[in-house]
Structure formats: structure tokens, C-alpha cells
Amino acid sequence: METRVAEIADRIYRLSTFLPAVGPKGFTFNQFLVDADEPLLFHCGQRALFPAVSTAVARLMDVRRLRWIAFSHVESDECGALNEWLAAAPEATATHGAIGCAIWLNDQAPRPPRALANEEVLDLGGRRVRRLDTPHVPHCWDAGLMLEETTGTLFCSDLFTHVGDPPAMTDGDILGPAEAAENQFGFTGVTPATGPTIRRLAALKPRTLAVMHGSSFSGDGGALLEHLAGFYEDRLKKGA
Ligand SMILES: [Fe+2]
Ligand SMILES: [Fe+2]
Image (cartoon, rainbow, N blue to C red):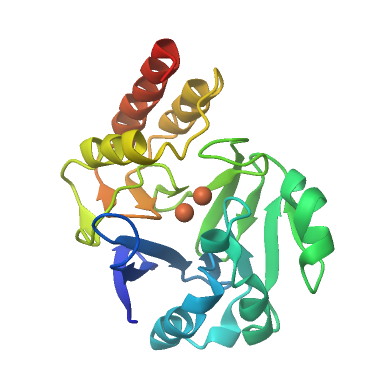
């Protein structure tokens, strides 16, 4: 198992592990490293991936420099290896939204997490990440995303999930493959709040979408998010 590294925005790195046996065409599991004075890792990966992903981080910097470990929601691909990362990086603090800390991290993490309020900014020194509460989008009550403000990079978690092993970065169509994956797997719990939540993200006009499963996207992220919101609103109308 190998984790590949690609820089998708200035000092933001995609760490991608392709698992060919998952789903019909295989599936990528992507973590993102924000290199700053206080480096932040977004998504931990599953525990089984930790040796490969931590080896990839070590190619970029000393893993012990990590100061923040963040993720969207409690699932194994998002945060399964959290405790392994906290052990490897003794100065690192896990950070999550207030709900996620209350329902899980305060109890399960080996050291106290830092709860971030909705819209709260973490200044990493050279990079700034803003926490965005997005309950149940893509799924789970504790869900939230992060925007890195200096590069306009939105860490999308499972939004825009698509299968296979496409290129690290594209300016082409990821919406079609993402809609196909949603139609096949139904991983988003679509509610009346789904469309408005995604439109709120669109208004941030991200220039890079850091996608957890599939290619990251460079271009008009706001327009793409508007289309995605429309897709879910249509599903809700059809009761699909
Ligand atoms: Fe998920
Ligand atoms: Fe995921």
C-alpha cells in the first residue's frame, strides 16, 4: 500500500491512498496536510492506513511538527487513526466542532481536544483555517468542513465523492462522477437543510476543492457547489 503526495494549493498537500478492492472501481482515501508554522492534518485515515500515510507525511516534514489534527465527522476514514497521530505527534491537539467534542472526542481522545465554534478561525501562522459547522452534511450530526482562507481551499470531506483512481487535481468535471456515486451509494442523508448548507459553502467561492475520495478540483468551486446543492434539492423533491 502506497500513499502518494501532490501539492494541490500553495503548501497544501493531498496524501492519497488507492484501495482497489473497495467498491466497483476502487476508491481513494485522501488526507490533506496544511504546511504552516503550526501544521494541520485534515482527516486521519483508517488505522490500517496509518503506516503508509505517516510515511508520506514524513517525506514532507517531521511528523512531530504536527500541531493540529482535524476532520469532518466521526467515521473510520475521517478519524480512525486519530490516536496513532496523537501518539506520533506529542504536541498535536485534536480539534473539532463543539458537538463532535461533546458526543465523542471529550470521552475518546487521549488528551483534551480544542472545540471550535462555527466560523471560528484557527491561525496556523501563514495559513488560516475556518471551521464551518455543517450538521448532517455530508452526514453525521457532528459534521463540519474547513476553509483555508489564504488559498481559498475548501476541505470538502465526502462532498463530491467519486470512485476510481482519478488524477490528484483536475479542472474538469467532477460533478457528473460525484452524482453517479451518490446515486449508487446514497451516502448523504438528504434533508431540507442540505441544499441551503451547501449554498452557504458556495458563497465562500473556494478556488480549490480538496475532495476526500477522488480528484481535487481547481476552478470555480462556488459554481460547482451551487450545482451540487441543486442536485440534492432535486433528489429531495423527487423523494429519491
Ligand atoms: Fe463520511
Ligand atoms: Fe470519507
